Length: 91
Image (cartoon, rainbow, N blue to C red; front, side, top):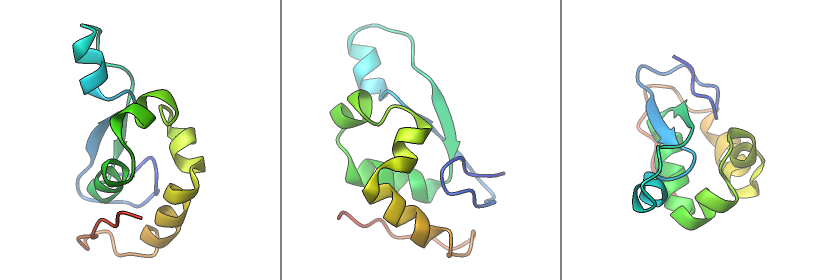
């Protein structure tokens, strides 16, 4: 299975809501679009960005890939072994 952000082939993927569920639940809206990403990318997204920024600015896969903080992480994580547990860095 391939992560939509880093492109690594990993054993397990997680579902990331591009518009955080916190935002859609409060407004009683249906959940927004999702992407399937590896746990490392998922943890890093939520470590770096508040839900409000995710909802307003980083609500597409392309926007996440183009963010400078994520680009730095993605360049690094692509070099890591897929089975390695990657630590989250809040930078």
